[in-house]
Image (cartoon, rainbow, N blue to C red; front, top):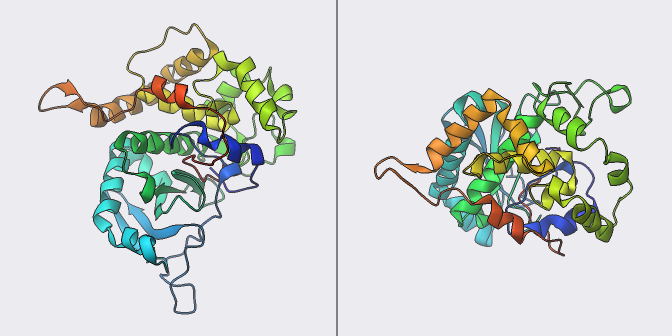
Length: 320
């Protein structure tokens, strides 16, 4: 997702789930400069003003350090814990297949306390062909929460990249849903979801503005349309939450609610089903014992935990 203006109600809704929420440009931190130098041009390490700790370049199966930020205290401890960086990256590889990593060119380890987030993504190229993913190392101890965060963030890259959106088309000339980065293609995942399940309530949604209580009322009025409270944030967060639920939910839903119909929309695309099988194959099955592990969260438990609060504990800093 992309970094743009921060909406007060987005910040409020971030507690919606103890670190299991996604990201959007509304809750993004500032975009990191995608240069290869390890200094700020003065011979000094740049300071991680937004919690940045270490930036890596993604190279297929591996990550290569671009720079360490000038940090101290606990952040310096985090920076030196390279084994933890690699452990987190190892989980990312289990979720994002090699064929999709060409879209994810940068990987950031950061401290989420500054922004109150557990993860984010934003495009590092304006044509949406390359993205940075960031994971908060201090919010990574709960393995299942971390996995959900990564799946959600991958969902953003999957639905907002240059195969889905055209960044050269402005909002004024876009005839489809316009997430912010560009105009969605007619057959894109996000445009299909918007046209089927958002267009009839879009004008009402736009009236909410920064009114937190109005947003809560909006969610409660249309609760059967959303897999989580946080999904009601906007269509971009909605589809990322739907993707995360699609992956983590064990059984295919019946489609009795609009929320379930959104999940079934994912099943209409064989390439998304293949992604689901890839992630679940790497995450759920213990091949030695032939049993399911607790690697993936149970989506229903997250949904019940999501309520509007006063703390930003989302896992996103997306430029979406």
